[in-house]
Amino acid sequence: MNSADQPSGGDSREINPLEAARREKMRRLEEMGIDPWGHRFDGHQSIADIRSREGEIETVQPGDCAVGHPPELRGPRVRAAGRVMLLRRSGKIMFLDLRDWSAKIQILIGKAQVGEADWQLAQCVDLGDLLGVDGELKRTKTGELTIFADSLTFLTKSIETPPEKWHGLTDPELRNRMRYLDLAYTDGVMQRFLRRTKIVQSVRQTLAEDGFVEVEGPTLHTVAGGAAARPFITHHNALDMDLFLRIALELHLKRLLVGGIERVYELGRVYRNEGISPRHNPEFTMLEAYQAYGDYQTMMDLTERLIVRAIQATGQPLQLPWGEATIDFTPPFARRRYDDLLREYLELDPDDPAALQDCARKRGLEVGFKHPDVLKNKLFEECVQPHLTGPIFVMDYPASICPLTKRKREAPGIAERFELFVQGMELANAYTELNDPDLQEKLFDMQLEGLPEEESMARMDRDFLRAMRYGMPPAGGLGIGIDRLVMLLTNCQSIREVILFPLYRPEA
View (cartoon, rainbow, N blue to C red):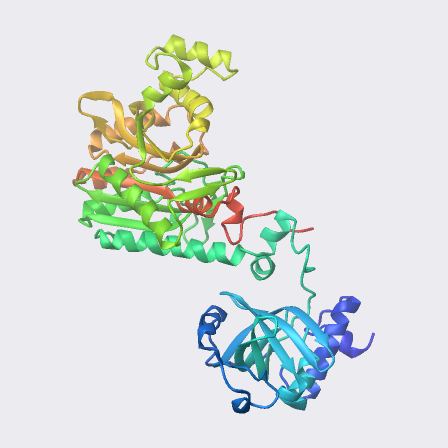
């Protein structure tokens, strides 16, 4: 192996013949005085914008045309930059497909048009290389919109061979591990993640229009609270203390309600040391919003508005595909009471503990729970939730399983809470927030009974209770799983398909 075949940077690994051929072309570029890693390239347009200029192409008389160009067409001068996705050579002409993050376009490179120096440059181009092109936008004889190049700029050499054109990246784990290749070479992936960005931008815009203030709370907590979940634990060396990666945004945002920020939200990452599934990732993006002097009905209206506007921001209709089904997000969304759904799907009295136990036994569920409402909720999750295609707001949950929620005045056993379900998946959770500090402390104590030590609520956040004693206004609170929302609005059945870098074990 000669020196040209050796990778740089002290890496002594053996390289395959395909990489060696690419490194040889890189060496030839350097001999021509061309930096294979490129430089600043100003003034280029997105390929989508270039394609939108097709209407500027006009037919002219043959006598007015420049030599070497199709005699019947004249188009605008354009400048593009992107990755070479397809490469076809034929004598003194080359065709490339160039793609950037907006679109793809064909490039025609003729030796006579670009000159000897750029033609030699073109001979060093491989699939996956990044290239800048100047030329005239026209159509070929077959009608293909094409940039007829007259100048080339080499921007970056791809040393690794890209995925094979027709099969590409087909293994889901490989696609998620190597998201950079997935974005570059799998059709639709770039558009999915750009759509995610539009969804998040829309959520922020809608909240801003409603007067909400965005804040950034701490991600390291001394007490992991706000949800019943197992946290990740880390250690701060200087303070010699264990800390928890946050499992929820709730308790710090409520402190801000006490401080007088009446409409507040955070859109950030939370971390739960739990299982991985098509709907669960150990770290995920959560929106939590709180509105002083509102309630769960206020949050229901806000949730509906956030989702509808997010769909509109992506340019889609309100009827979206989900696998072979269709989800109709046309408002208003259905609203049903929790107990009514249990009656409908299980044909029992949800207030009868014996009936609940009998129903659970028949379905092979564990019945040794301390409180009937815990069993009731297990039956709801197992036997009702999978049938909720939605979107449907399920409201008025048993108060005993909702320790942060205000009770209904006319029915103290019912909590003013809703969950939004779509295709059997919980998408949003909201409360009329409990602001009685004495009742809050009592309910915390009740919830902590019997929970394993490693779960988040196994230590009470005393500072939060102290803050409440200074007076937290009546409020509505809302949480929306952003990753799940993106799943539903992009027709992705796995949460890993909408997270740029999902967690995997290290490669062997």
